[in-house]
Length: 306
Image (tube, rainbow, N blue to C red):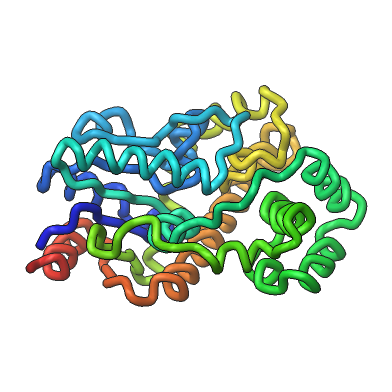
């Protein structure tokens, strides 16, 4: 039986959006964003948001709905997406949730802890501690109380490190324990997931080529406009892949070719992290190994057949 909700996950540049759009056209579905950077309106090109022409081919939801100055949490996204899925279901249409943010998919399928609101003073204290201690010492302190969080949070992710500590400080319970006490957000029979896992060398080549195309289309102008706003560098969109490298060029610190090469390298690293998440956190999801669109579609049809 056709599921009410399709979940399509995978690394950047793997063809997720094209697959979702084709599925939406074929099945009369509506597309819902599960990419933490594509939530924001400011960097359509650099975050590979669907183009206006693509959005015109099927209803799209939660793309470009937030301003760069507005930091969306996973919880806020989950509340928005569940409301969106309800409205799509009320229209009798299938939903296709697509993106590369693994934590979003985990929240959607496994639930999200109902953590109490953190007092502003506690949040400010955690931020001050991070600034005084630095990442290494702050992470070591967190590891003593919540080793799971310290181990899974990526290097340089100040926002999530501070979040893990402030939850512990405010509630006396670790973030990992809170997350371990959740139930499913979606009924198991309501959704079906597929994960894209193409050959790494081919994916990396596509990442490199796509970033060149983004620059040719005007991604540098997007970053310049974002930089001109002088936003807090800890905001989520300010950490989008490519922003730091292209901003360095705009400040005159690097040549454009050097900035492009650095952004391409960071994109490949990001894709690798996403593939690791898929391999570890979505082990039971069917895989699509093709990168070429027609073969990818054929693989999808084969696994989705009744």
